Image (cartoon, rainbow, N blue to C red; front, side, top):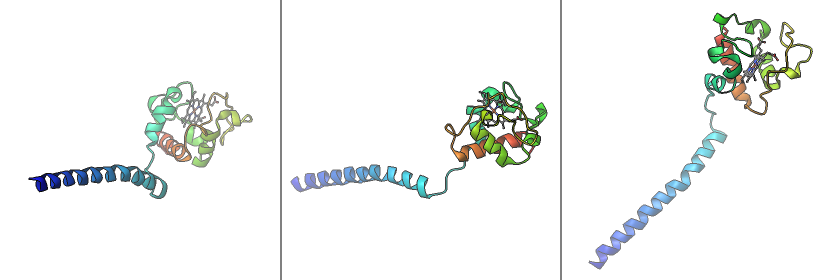
Length: 137
Ligand code: HEC
């Protein structure tokens, strides 16, 4: 009897240790995958809906800021023939271009915020790509 009880107790301890081991291992695995593994692709549409659609309209139909959707008469690909210029503009905001921005030297009001402190570079890249896809690019 007492041997049986002891083995049950030992099994219990082993089970608890195994669970504790798993719990301790998980955060390490997560940290490793985010620092050394390839980063998960950013959803540009989700970034747009969260950060941009309030001014540029749901689906890029325009509002306080210009439209991006082709159907809404978007000028985006004319203003920024090169995506990297658009990335720079979104990063710095329109206030950083007092003389005008883009290929058409469009005058800004300063109402387009800088996103350098709000979004990570890969999020800016992803949202720019999404906006260009709305514009037919
Ligand atoms: C607070 C309102 C506001 C928010 C939020 C906003 N924008 Fe803008 N955006 C503007 C305004 C206004 C302009 C026009 C430039 C100006 O008046 O300064 C503009 C212009 C632009 C342009 C240039 C388009 C053109 O044809 O001239 C791009 C690209 C752009 N915004 C991208 C973004 C992205 C990407 C986001 C989200 C990450 C975003 N904007 C969020 C207000 C906003």
